Image (cartoon, rainbow, N blue to C red; front, side, top):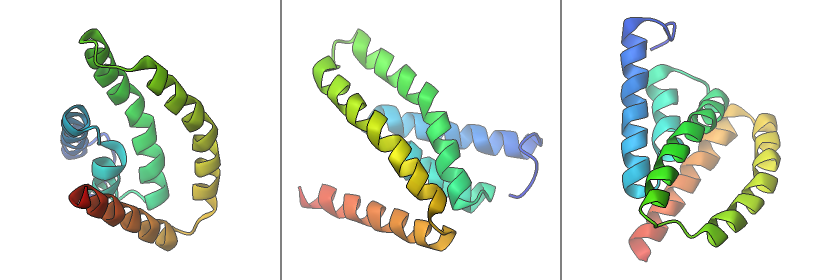
Length: 125
């Protein structure tokens, strides 16, 4: 779709990608990497690097809304969430720094391997 993000078609496409990511995020706990990155690369035409960065930025409101809904229902284990957050706050800048140095092709391969690995693990368990 290599057109400006302000064109009507691009706005609708991006909103639909966000809708799908939000739906799957709330339903299955996925959304950013699993849904948005492939669609931002394949449909919207972003580079792999830009798609990763863009999906991370979009996850802030997606995660906030989902976490708030589940928190209001009493489903959040705050101790576990806090420990995950501590690790993620250390790991995220390290991962972002590595991602910025990895070539586009290798990043696509690594992302694909991760998706296949996660899929196999889910089917296996």
